[in-house]
Image 1 (cartoon, helix red, strand yellow):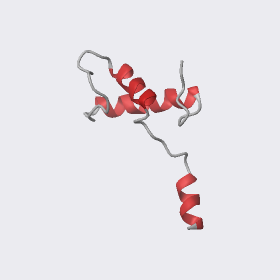
Image 2 (cartoon, helix red, strand yellow):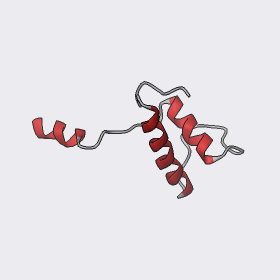
Image 3 (cartoon, helix red, strand yellow):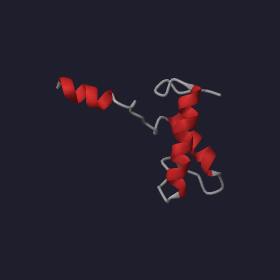
Image 4 (cartoon, one colour):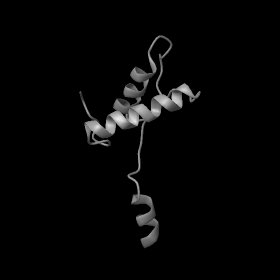
Length: 68
């Protein structure tokens, strides 16, 4: 399993992909093309590997805003 550098951990990748699958199931638009015959888990993993999924570690944004 290739873990993108912006994600950094295979565990984080799985959690993010699971959260993205939930979003896709609720009707979110895929961020990659050619998804007509793919399962939602495959779409989420493709999004992660292409760099279209982003995340912000919990508490990091609050800390950055605190020092601004």
